[in-house]
Image 1 (tube, helix red, strand yellow):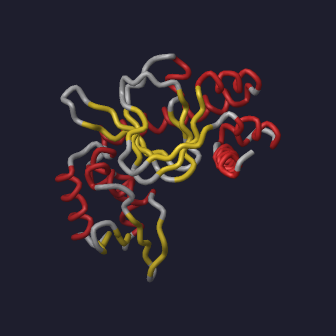
Image 2 (cartoon, rainbow, N blue to C red; image 1 turned 30 degrees about the vertical axis):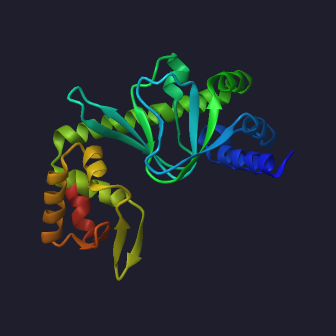
Length: 235
């Protein structure tokens, strides 16, 4: 094995260890899974595959982030989900054989592990627990999507924004919490099912109310956590 091959094997192994659907396997079985994974790198804004592509791979995020988008009938791009380390995409084509109805793009330099569907089918046949855990993940995604749809129809933009800000990882600063917006305002607006203009107005309202304060373009201090929580719950 060359040094490059060894590095690729180690990268795949680490990738497999991150993925919940593979974490229930024994170490020897995880190594077997890793042996059929192919590491790949995506540059920022690089498209892994587009809607309608003839792809037969499952992608697992090792480092970085991918975004899943769909186009509306009017041709607008809608952000559906952001995938981080340990999350996967491409399972729909694996389960149904249909071509994807979404596009996968790297939000930043991203390393992925690629599983061909043929190899994945053999792994599932040998380890049925992989399929069970995959279905659990898909069920959780469905519940998340239903919750988002309910929020879109029943809450104001400010409430959805408050809820989103509270879910971001942050650091404590002088009794408050500072978070960093992980995406562009356009992508966040799409995720919250609103427009960039409405998102800007909602940010301004939260700032004027004293619930948040802005530190540059992407850094936000959550000054009133109780107020944000109340707004998110009452929206």
